[in-house]
Image 1 (cartoon, rainbow, N blue to C red):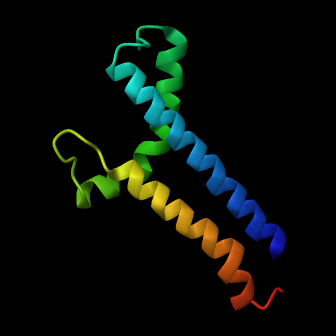
Image 2: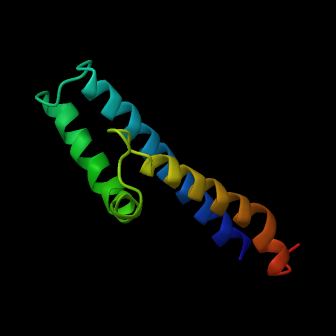
Length: 98
């Protein structure tokens, strides 16, 4: 059971990194530092959006962008932090693994 919890925590960390990449890429694209006409950038952007958009879409329905500022990635980071904290600290105690 502990291995399953550690694997879940690792997957959440991976999702966290993908969201961070998405945020940084969106800023770089917005400020025209990188260009989506580049094949590599366009491909990477499509992969990152394919991973993040299904997670962000329901949150955006509840919390729409405010003055052009999208708060949904921040909400995802808070949820990931909560889940990782719960998996690392509370869930093992609830399951009496320690």
